[in-house]
Length: 433
Image (tube, rainbow, N blue to C red):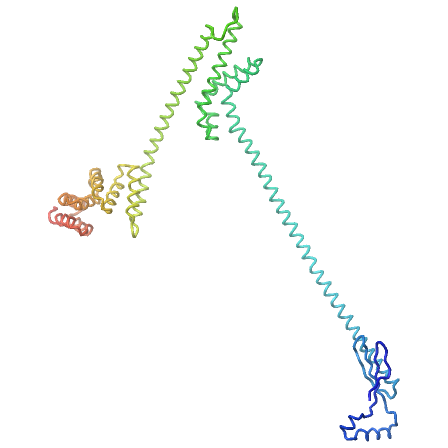
């Protein structure tokens, strides 16, 4: 029968004997009591104890038998201590494995962190490099733009306008007039020469096209500035050589003579320049006309080929072909192929009155073109001119190597059910010899 013999805060100690209880006696019908009494007789009254010790900390328990309570308790404590030591050892091994796993995980993550840092650093270097290249490119572009403006615009403008600039500076700083006024005259001569030779003026017109129309204006302004500077130089020279006896105005006799001479020089210069410009324009127009004469036939043939491509489609667009052939004829009015194709398209569109004169022109230019003779015959038949149609059909037949072959092709080619067309074809087959 179990009962508590001793306990403390950690361990709970229970002792029990092997004497049968009331339940055991009831279930065995008293046999267990008889057997127990027999054992007592043989072994004595005290035949042993069971000790069960439970550890409330580790929740482990152990039960051992001993002949006395002390021996049973001692055996149980030793057995429980072995279990407890084994449990602690297992826990320490488990904790060691966990620490090892955490350490490996930490070590495996370190290279990744370094790799991420390296990637971030590499990306930052690439961004800095790209930004640096963009900045360098922008600086180079700005420098090149400044150089271009200086050499392509500023210097040509300065050279072209040197006469006007020197005159204005000479009038402002009169003490420098003896240097600036001759420079103005020389600048006027330079701008006239440059305008005709195409040095700085040509470079300016090429680099800044919107200033091209201003160059003639700048020419005449600087010529006028040079003339004024020349007048001032002459007047100064004459005043020094023979000073006037008393102050007089600008319109004295000798000043008027100087003005008249300079105005004559200016008028001759401007007139000469206008004549040269007119001759140059005429030369450019002649060259352009010559180029158009050369280029127009090429373009006309290209358009004629485009029209034929439209006609060769499964469902030809005759209106589109008509527009293309009209452009070809406009570029080259004597293009026989384009004229014939235009007349043919007019006929397909039912505009026979427009087709007839075009095809007649082609026949007059190239009477041996079989296809044009046939097209003209069909158009005239559509217009009710059966006899004229038969005549052109006969010309069509005669242009072949034999009449039989020509008549065979005529019958196979012109199959329009129109009665006039068939009448002209039948007349040709019967009468053309």
